[in-house]
Image 1 (tube, helix red, strand yellow):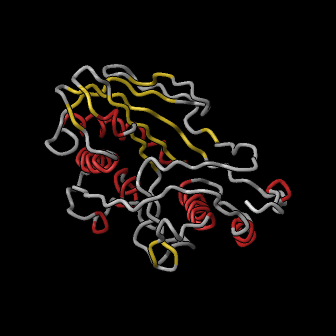
Image 2: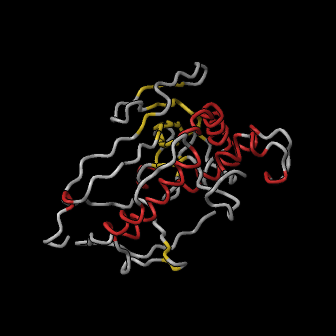
Length: 272
C-alpha cells in the first residue's frame, strides 16, 4: 500500500449486515472414492439435479414455462428468477443465487470408505426456509453418486455454526428430526487492519468492461467492486433490507489500495 495512505483515515460508512446461515454436511463414502480437484462444480450439479427431482410436481422441462416458478424451492434456489417488481437486473432472466458451496481442499477429497467427506454450505436470507428440501436433495445426490463415475455416499450428519464463531452443533442426523439453531445470523465485519492477505482456494474469474481480467491486470478495486455488487444484489433479492451505501465513494476508496505482492497463474478447468 502507498506509504501516504492510511486505511484507518477513511470516513465511516454503514457496513452491510447480511443474514447468513452456515452449515456443514458430513458424508460417508460407501466405496473408496476419488473426487475431482475443486469438486464444488460436481457437488453443485448433483445438488441441482436432485433438488429439482424431489420438489418439481409439474415435470415441466423448463422452469420459466411452469405455473409454479415463483412458488417452488428449486427455481428460487438454483435458477433464481428476476422478480417482476424488481428495480435491478430487469434485463436478466436470473439473479444471484442465495447459496454458496465450500468444499475441502483437493487433497482431502481422496480417501477410503472410512474417510468422511465434508461439504460446507452458506445460505443467504430467506433461502434458509428451504433447508429441509436442501438437506433431502443432498441425501439424494450423495446416494446417486457425485463426480465422474457417480461415486455414492451417505449423509452422516448436518452441523450448524449458529453464531458464526467456529462452534458447530449437530442439527440433523438420518432418522432424527431437524433442529435448527438461530436460523440466520447477521454477519459482522471484522476490524479494519493495515493489510490483508487473500488466498484463492478455487479458480477465480473476474470481468471488467466485458474483458476477462488476467492475473497481471488484477487490481484491488476489480475484486472489491465484484464483491460489493454481489453483496448488494444478495441483500436486495434475498433479504428484507437492501444495502444502501455510497457505492461510488467506496469504489473511489478501493482504487487507492495497491497490491504489494501476488502469485497468480492462469488455470484451465475442465467441467463435466
